[in-house]
Image 1 (tube, helix red, strand yellow):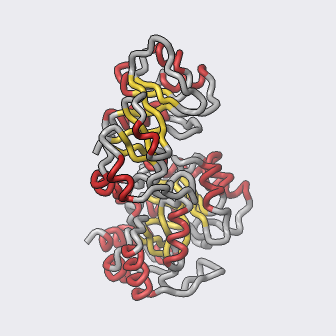
Image 2 (cartoon, one colour):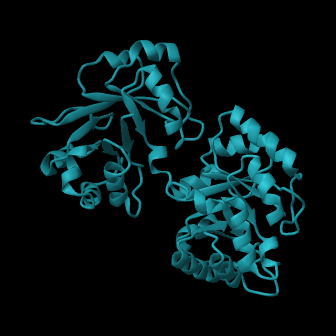
Image 3 (spheres, one colour):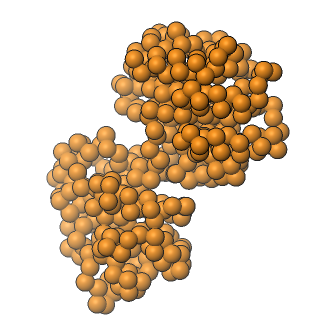
Amino acid sequence: MRKIAITLPEFFDGEGEAITKLLTEGGYERVHIRKPGASVKEVKSLVKNIPENLYTLLSFHDHFNLAMEIGIGGIHLNSRNNTIPTGWNGLVSRSLHSMEEIADQGYDYAFLSPIFPSISKPGYKGNFNSEDLRSSVNERIFALGGVTPRRFGEIEQLGFGGAAMLGYAWKRNLDMKAFQLQFITHPVREMSITEEVEKVLSGGCRWVQLRHKDADESTLLEEGREIRRLCDRYGAVFIIDDHVDLVKELNADGVHLGKNDMPLAEARRRLGMRRIIGATANCVVDIERAAAEGADYIGLGPYRFTTTKEKLSPVLGIEGYRDILSECGCRNIELPIVAIGGITAQDIPALMQTGVNGVAISGSIIKSVNPVWTTMEIISEIRK
């Protein structure tokens, strides 16, 4: 499948390196630099972080004169810039939003959208039916809007020449091995939050969520900075519970949102596509809603009654997980799911057979005689 990536509207740290990786390792044939409202200086600064030998694989949506000046390989016509500059010899692409526009000849390739429900714009749905697409599209037309690898087969069957990806191309890929065991902190008398984290990391856990509901902001910042340092040392993912406003300050990898926390779409708007956002769910409807709003993963539970959460949703048990995971399959919902709520090492074999991708554990690790050994035992059970 031919793939083209379109940058997010906002700049982010390491974007030049990310673009380079898409072109050299990610299988993308082109990257479109789309930064509405960005200055020439800002775009030039971004491109400087991309090797010059890749410039021919870039297309600009703005600042066409700069594209000519530095040897960019393509320009994309749009409502802001709808004229090909004099002397341009590179590729020309454009955006299409109707079948009638496909017949135009003034482009080398084009993006037709929206084809599927959008990933980066919750509530933005597809606008075409399959029969019309099959009779109209061709190898010059790339499908745009809600495109993920799961859609590639359908895109090929419809006759598109390839796929253009905005949201999915920039979503942070989850480390699914680390995802298998998520440790959620919980204050106990025997040790500090950071001591808990160091023990589970020593035992092999590579995903930590800082959850300390009664702590004030200064305490969370102090704990979070130390956890960030520990996670960097062990190469672990660091998620903070609830506090969207602290994610960037702590350089956390993302946030986990409960059902009564900030709306997911608002968190995504604030954090952008490069941060991980997890959502709590208790049923298929919760999962479907979170998927539509752009969640990266789901914490599904509770498995059983637990004292680490004050407000508990209905307990699911093994049958509940089986039913929900089965229904997710029927509805083509493909979000990683971690089971949560009172889980012990003995529960893991049955839980993993339901189709969950991992488990989130707190009490059964930190209340054990040897948290390091217990962490190792749990990881061993998961990977059997």
